[in-house]
Length: 305
Length: 302
Image (cartoon, rainbow over all chains, first blue to last red; front, side, top):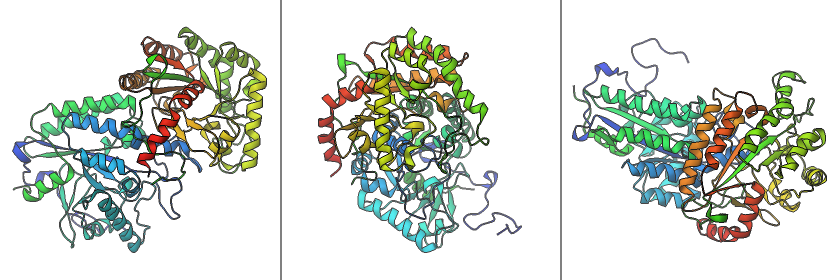
């Protein structure tokens, strides 16, 4: 369906809001930049159910291969076995409370990791069923509703807490996903990569916010899809932060970093992440918080004109 | 709690029995040159085409690989010999028949030989169980005939294995499978008979993937050093494995070979390095760590 030529967005999820027309956003205690680090614990399935959608060039392994793809499966499994602990150690070193995006397969089959994340003070948000089953507009409404409910319920069973945040596998959404998420109790969504502040999404079912991710800093996007050298990645993390810090003098900014332990948690990569986060956390007035803390604050302290 | 393909128990690296390598080494380093032959006119199975660029033959790509055996291999040897590296070659076994000088150079250096299939243009993922079973006998026999050595492990040809491969390998007497990129230590692999472990290969510390993109030799050195430094630090508590996967047609290019030398000499300048082969890592692990690892992993997988 072509866009209707009118003022604002060509959909109804949120209002057009250029940065220059917004009120001033203040973070707690005069902080300038809010830093949110999302860590993905997502599982590739050996044989996904029929009808599942997986992006054609899904990262990991070598290149798309016929079944059985031992290399991609096991490359990604590295994150659960090894990489996650390196990543969480680095976040812990700088006092950054992680936001773990955990899929249902992980929540159900890796109780050790669920406990580990809870014991380390992580917020756990829903992340679909598995990276082999992403939401697309080809899902029926009923199927999508069941999918979301299954993800949320599985996480609730595993952690004892209902998740309030959501990141779709591969950022996948249909046109109705935000509304369906809202109906299942989700309060914030990380699928949108279009801003440096949280913003409200329109939902008839309750308050819903976007917690936008910086897509170019997503390790899969940078290191895998765009084959960036790890040293360059470290540099852009620092430069991105420095400019956001500069630009936050008048109104707070949000830097959401989305990471995958099977990739950034590899031995040769982890020190570069350590270095970049160290650079950020040495600055005064950085608020490292998990997704729900940021959204709770934003809800109670919306931008003031 | 286990997930398909039901081959590997979950075991977080921070909560495992300690691995002590020989002489208290921190890192077991194995160097895996992929000595390969890609067929000029391979049979196609309808799924995977090694030369998708053109109708076959693809002279440019075929000869690019062949450069490895004619030129690159010999130059690569200089960097390996300079650093006294005993390799574990990931070998297309037909190389032993086609190119006896290459075979002789490897035998002379007492390298270990990991099967990488017969040719790199055969894709065993579609094969019947019987065909694959017979093929292991061919692999074993070909290696024995040309080197006198017993075949102990495989990295699937072109990185392909079938659903049955671990069982069939174990049945044929092999003890390790390197298609798993899931860990920095060996890991028990469940099979119907015998004992099988993964000795993780690397597709990241690997010239074959790096040099498809804009990376060059200097970056290879940078990540080899960073990989080693991290594993060396962690290896103080419990032994780690580092695999360096290389290809003669890539790192044996004139403009790259010095970087291989630089990476290897950096690593070999450290104490506490067990420069070894996947064969030896697998044997050592099965003798010293396997049973304990299986018993320990039980607690996470009930």
